[in-house]
Image (cartoon, rainbow, N blue to C red; front, side):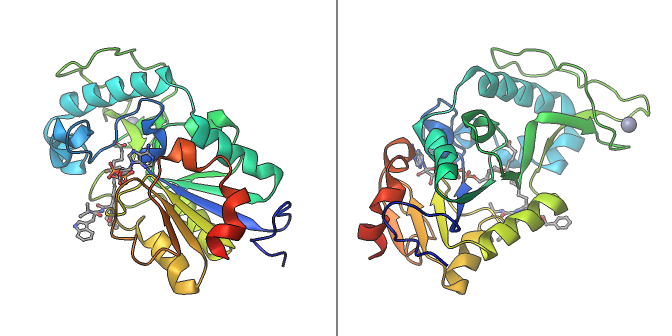
Length: 249
Ligand code: BJW
Ligand code: ZN
């Protein structure tokens, strides 16, 4: 197995990136838990992002997700997404993302595992059938929009994972494999508080795999990470592989 700290070429080395909302912040996508600009500062997560909230008032939840769908479509990948994609020239790279945007894919990453689903797919909440029609463009937030109905009478919902829902089996299993098989795990832009996803870097730590955390703020993972970089993603990730000999010794 080539050394992860080899300075020029990482062929045969597997790097697994575990990303959260912070990697997309510099593209203009708000995070969830920032005290001032975070999404949860505006809305109650358990009303707008839970199976309970969907059952209680689907028209509010649908309107909010249409607005976020517009926002995520309107922004572009930043230097952090592009750096991760470029690492595929040097290493076997897997991206495990909690994000429901598609910025990793648009930057060129080829193996992206969405543990919290995708806001670019929709399905019926009753029969599970995929919904392929265009959804309305929603450049400004509005309070309510009635979700479309499936032929079975169910409501069309985004293919995202809300509080209280299980994670998609296939993406979860691929993510566990990507962490177990990694020579290096880079954790970027996540508060590391939402489980079971936050357990993935903990699994790497328990296995003795080097874990580099990139986050301007401390998180519950910080003390157990091998290295913590208090930097923003778009400045830290370009050049990170070249810094490994210094960072990991
Ligand atoms: C930068 C930066 C820059 C800023 N550069 N960095 C008690 C204990 C443990 C668990 C639980 C518990 N009570 C309930 C639970 C379970 C619950 C949970 O974990 N809750 C905790 C919050 C308490 N989990 C669940 O419910 C999960 N399901 C489950 O457990 O199912 C069990 C089950 C099994 C079988 C049958 C049925 C059920 C599901 C969790 C789903 C999470 N969903 C969301 C919404 C997705 C859709 C959407 O996008 O709307 O996922 S919530 C939200 O949080 C979203 C995110 O993916 C997730 C994580 O957030 P993330 O990405 O970390 O963002 P932030 O905002 O928190 O942090 C951003 C970070 O970036 C910050 O640290 C900044 O400093 C940093 N940053 N700028 C780098 N430029
Ligand atoms: Zn249906």
